[in-house]
Image 1 (cartoon, rainbow, N blue to C red):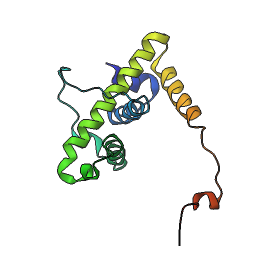
Image 2: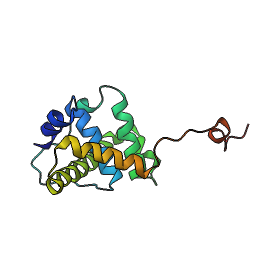
Image 3: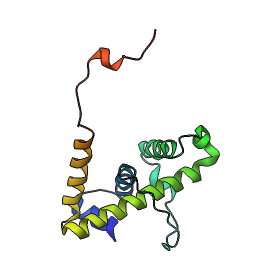
Length: 139
């Protein structure tokens, strides 16, 4: 299974870390793949919510995926946010597996390439002045 391969080869310490990375890759690649027919039962929320930063990524992905519905963050819609996260994680895992298969490289090299490409596309981290940071602020 790809998750175990990524843990062993790419150094992800936990199942959760692989899923968080995969969801970010799925979002970056615009790959949202439903879990229907996979035979799995989905991701348990307790796997994702410890440590607390995990739920922030889940919420950020959901808000951007359903940008016309701010109520997506309502507590009653947690299952919907998890489903959206699962679909992007599934899409990200699918993309990573395709890269491993077509490049004939280890998961570690594919992960490194995915991260390097994402940083290059965004221009990497750029220094900003205080004026740039506060550019749109009106006091």
